[in-house]
Amino acid sequence: MNKFIVLKTEDIKDHLTFEEQLFLGALIDRINVCRETEGKTFNDYVVINRNEPYIDEVTGIMKKHGYWEGLE
Image 1 (cartoon, rainbow, N blue to C red):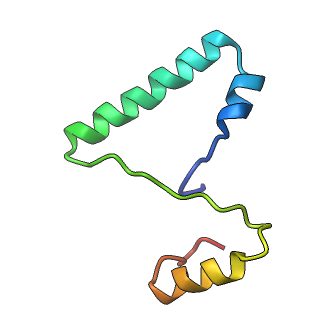
Image 2: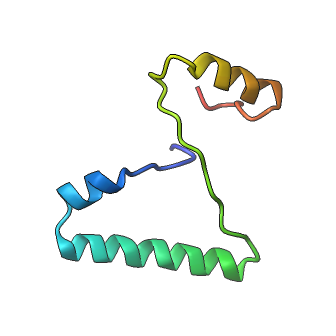
């Protein structure tokens, strides 16, 4: 299983019905409430497509700092 799931907002709008979008929003809200009760903070991520020409530099930096284990 992947550690993260990334959904492009445009894809959500283009491919889900309004009701499905509301349901997805409710699920995300529930996860955030549960994380809050566990004392976890909101995480803000940076997403980089693996086909970018600078990906080797970015992954090199992540590996150097121990943040690339098991992500390949």
